[in-house]
Length: 339
Image 1 (spheres, rainbow, N blue to C red):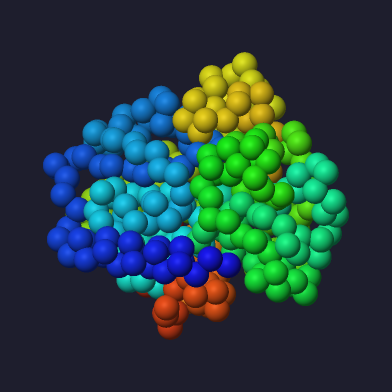
Image 2 (image 1 turned 180 degrees about the vertical axis):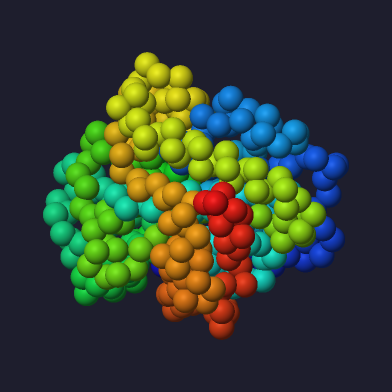
């Protein structure tokens, strides 16, 4: 593992926190939302301006390259709401970033996978010794890659893990600079064309009990001042998921929904339907239960964040683990949406 890169993340995040002493500056009824290249149903809501129509707010969307970039932007106040995986949120909360996770965008399941290049002669996790693997640091893929290696009895130090964002993974893959990668769509779909899936996040969760998820989090100061907005926003998110789950067959490459997902995520239109099927989307009622956001310290989300932070600490990615991660989990808006 590349300790200097991990230290760099901590230093940059610490600097961002230093800049976040003052609340995020925004005009009334304006919000900046940071998102990634994830293939999710609510991209259609972004395309149709459903959030603007439901809330009356001016929405500015900012696409960022990784979960680490999202959490740094949240820490500095550059964005008010951010979309990232459970691993970067666990790291951010451990560093003291003032955020609350309020919506589980998906259960990652099989939407993230470890792919080995054709011709790499790697058929098992043990075969990855000495190989170069591209992984976005402090991501859910990073977390699950290390979990998988350790579960297989492979010392992560025997693998050359390179800290690459998804677009950089694709470029390195096309150049032949890496032997494997652990990533999500749309890059995952592209590298599968010249590689084989060795394992997925779903497989790893089943074998180890350590699941991962993607979520949305809001700065605490913004949440306090914009309760009604967040209640409406969650309803829009829920409606977008329901639009997909209630009629999956309608989401074809020719549909406006799939075209919107492709546009906002950067995925190829033809790959979007299969990519969406890799995720599991969760209703507000389920999210409000202890299975996800509800239940305080014992909630699945809080427990998952704690387990992830503990693991990241062993890797040197975070310096401390909080006694209770429910301080960064808020189920109030999903409870209202479930009524």
